[in-house]
Image (cartoon, rainbow, N blue to C red):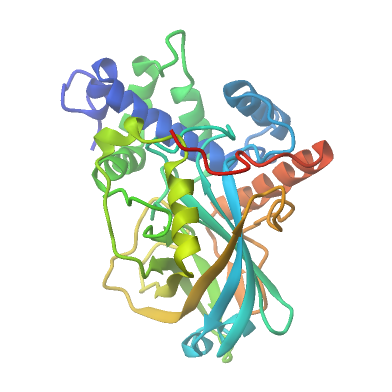
Length: 362
């Protein structure tokens, strides 16, 4: 439904007078930039990889050696135990019964290594899974099930509409027409407002967002999305108290929980039904779609990035083993370019120190 800037209950009406709504817009801007930063070739000569990289460095400062997006993070190692149930969907060796090695990373949104955890931004987990046959599967997952735009073209329009002006906020006169033309972005803002916010990395559910193709032994491709479902007890935060939380409360909590024992998530594969969109990450598939639990992720060791193995991994979502392939979602190729270009830039700058040698306590 189109948004009327004069309607006090609309997103744009709120933005005009409510800093909370403006913060939500800013959060959405951050989510979009984190996905598309440095994605060249989709936007024409006006917006190339260098321009986006420079814009992000101006926004959050240049922190050499750090990732430009998902900057604040922590490494981990562990294993994925396939239960064999995934083999009817995909020939990927990782789904056979047995153990695969995992290197991964937890992170929060934004481009500053010392940013506070008390912000309304997504949490993320990235995995590099090495199956017993040596094939590698890399996946970068977020705590939101959907994305605010569906195409690079929509991203371009969004970026132009939400660029900050003199007061550091987007111009409602530009945001209004964009939102009126893009109800999917309005829906995402409402999603951020309404979805519960988990209290920890450990009890957060993570989503692939994009669709992928699973190729079975019969050669048939089935389109899927996947999630990591926490085994930890769900606990929810009061979003109004976020700014009052200690700077590193998510990472402090993560380290404390890991010290008490292994951290676990179950991986579930959701199968698309006929008519479900595979090329639109703004649309969540219904929860009643068939879902298959294919194994369990166990994290048994945390380590800072300067000491751990995850810093030099490019968590490219199109780094896929035999039996998994990309879908027709146009965002996937952009994400692949994002991570590749980011990796090249930070690798040339050399190693960086962790955001904190030890957890910071306020």
